[in-house]
Length: 216
Image 1 (cartoon, rainbow, N blue to C red):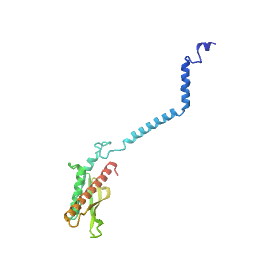
Image 2 (cartoon, rainbow, N blue to C red):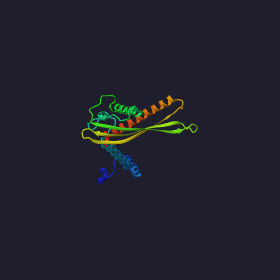
Image 3 (cartoon, one colour):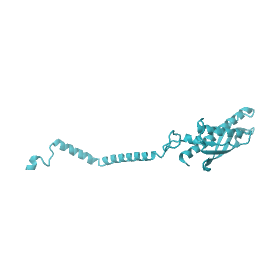
């Protein structure tokens, strides 16, 4: 017949027909291969799309540039006016009040000049001291614990509104080498006081940084 003579309806190359049959058998043997690969690709693109959309919602806490073009954290912190911390004159707390304020000012400004104040920070503090381990023979303390409790409030100068309030504390232990080593004991107490003051300053700075970045 004419259609058979012209080659219609039959493959021209027998080897090609064989290859097509093998490929068809391979696909039919693994029906889920192509769909699973497409599923993985779709999930990968979906994850990238979500990451791109949410990437603009996050801001590095100590970044040099603000995504919105506003002032960066360093500039905002340097515009905080830290008031003098009230404490009884001539007491250990008065010295610690100065240490806490100086540590805050250095952390906020980086040792540079302070910007025009936009906020005012007020801090109140008190100290505690207790014995942790006591010698059962002499009833004297071998290890003592020194602590500082602080409350603070941040006020926006332009509106007079208190935008942040909080409390923080620090507890630092120190050894007492012996009751006869009076100067070593005083030195240990002084170091503990300074460490506790630095913890208070770091905690307050972190809270203010969180407010300026997140607004809460």
